[in-house]
Image (tube, rainbow, N blue to C red; front, side, top):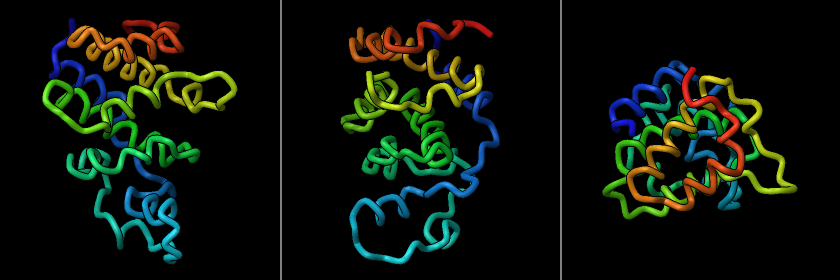
Length: 157
């Protein structure tokens, strides 16, 4: 079984210096889905998260709807943050963000997913986290997510 630190290191190595590259920040996404009629404010004026590692835990815990984003850049940038957050907080969190993350990593028929756009190293990091979650809690949802797609990803790269 992988330790929390090993899983976090795998995630950081896989997603490293990933940038938002035109994707939406959490605040921008919330404004759009909230239909607040607000003008799309530039990302650097709303959130100062130049790196996915800078997104605060409290924001991840309350704004997990971003995991449903259809925009790949938005999704992958925040996916990295959620993977790292989940590795560090899975044993103690009461936030539904953990369940939302695992559900977002479960392939569903008829739904176009973004999994194939991830690099092999990123896919490996996702699988490592899901195995960590499944091993720590006998999390059947994480096990289902692995079986839905991630079992095809090599365990070690």
